[in-house]
Length: 218
Image 1: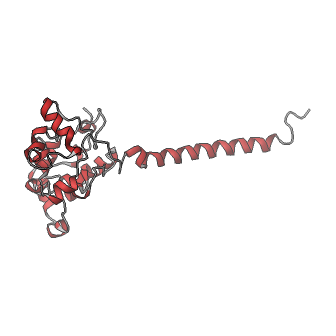
Image 2: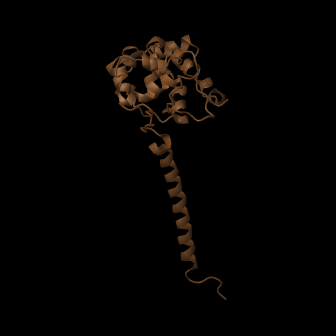
Image 3: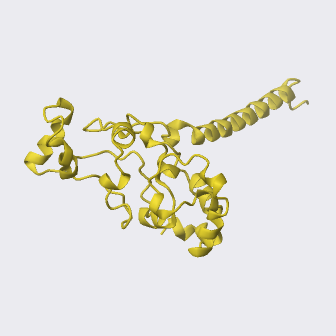
């Protein structure tokens, strides 16, 4: 007796084809999702208690990043500005502005403003701001042109691939440490093509050690 019907082979081929399409479709979806702004949060903004404009303060007023992020040169964390830093100016300027009410309340109640991180990293990733600043990684390398951001958003994906790209080839990203807060570097690298290699030699930067798992996962 014939065990399989005449259409059994066709159904099997169709089933296998559907399975293959589903697998390939799933892989394509996951790959696209991993690079999407939904996964990386690139370009996303975080709601803040105060609508702080980096564009106004950095580009307009010329404030240095370290004026507000005072611990960035000597700590793993850049830190948020304490309220008295804001009130250095705003005790005299825009004293009745409704947008600054949370700042005035924070000062009056002696309670810190709860800023929401824009460039947060996972808990399993160790990152030290001070060592990057000390070696000459400019703020713009990771945070983008904040001087053009009326509302601060995440400029880079902060995925493992992004970090490894710099760790594998640090030279193009190195700048004079005392100039790391410069936003517009223009053609600086073209005018100083030798700086990266010289800085790596001066600081004994070895890419093979930078890509070790324990560098970021401790």
